[in-house]
Length: 326
Image (cartoon, rainbow, N blue to C red; front, side):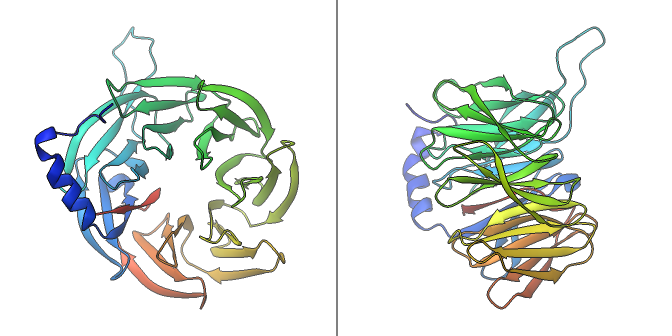
């Protein structure tokens, strides 16, 4: 089965391009209506993809061939049409630098995740109480699943069998079977769970509890919250180091980046002002990228020296980020 949007006559060119690809960080730049491309070697913006309405969500296919972005903007229906408002999923070819295709989805898109085989893109729709999954192969199409109130973030197991979706409105996490595309269990999420991360052995989920200013630890087997750490008001960003030994989190109100060693429980804090927001511990770069919700910039952090390596001025604000190839 061929993935949609691949033009057979250009397939050889795509393969040779991928062989020469260099790692980059893609950033959804929100109000700038752009997706940015950052070179982690130089900490500079090397490319911009325009014409993408208010992108907040973003993923990239494993082969680097496509970047998929989701819009936070809802398109209202005509009077008398009771269907949910629509948002747009943009499929971008990063080498050519333009949108190859679009797909419609119900309600604003907050965050996205992509299955390990790069076939399905899961989008959370907080105003619709569920997720959608877009099929990037065959005839394509977007289907929906109800999860809970205010779905926010999704993580997927490495084998592609299960996904976990935080429902910030009812303090829960939905476990989804990705073969049947059905909710099979409901786990605790702590108060108002938003961003999620899976431990390296996938036995634990980490969930940011935004309003409570905490980070909860959930046992995947039992579905219970087993521990929590104080992060601070406006807790938001969350990710694990590449080796899985450190969890990073941000607090917008306290204006700090926090690193917690999972073995010892020891923690480090770094002041970042104003309002540290989304973060990504980018695999293969040895760096942590943190955006600001109040200024148009991204901090580049060296977690070993625990210093700011660079600040990158960007258009708009940095939302979801993803590692890819260009």
